[in-house]
Length: 229
Image (cartoon, rainbow, N blue to C red; front, side, top):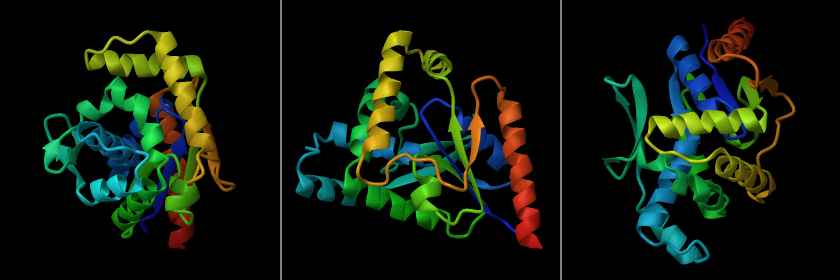
């Protein structure tokens, strides 16, 4: 069947990445975590003391950033590399989460990342998750999903993820971070987080990961049959 682009957008900790990874695996598609790209930029800015209010510093820094993904066979997952170094664990830490929405809202950063993302998805057969994939990066994606979930559920999921990385963060602090990111992502001037008109809404509050994956796979199959015919 003809390969398609599957764009999965939504709020933080709704299960976007987990769903996207499994869908890509079952379809034999490439998985691209756009959020990891912005986290990698945030890490670079942090490590190199880039002033996010200085356009010249931002442009210079972006030119020095190379982001790639490599599959880790032992973990059976794709990992993020920044200028040749594996930064997968570091970019998931809370101090990066607290800054990533601010950095990703910078127009120069967003335009550069969007350009890279479009190149990665040019040949189709891609599942990409993020904040503006269906609305901006791939507005013509054959399948668009927008995920959401209750705040309490999202906070519990994020805390569990952090605990698995030996980071103990109180639920109230996580909820504060999620709400702040929601606000910044939804109100930024450059490609804000919105629900694309032709997106399917997936509320993951009370359904399991396998159910989320099955829902997306069913829609994907329908789309592939449609476009193949």
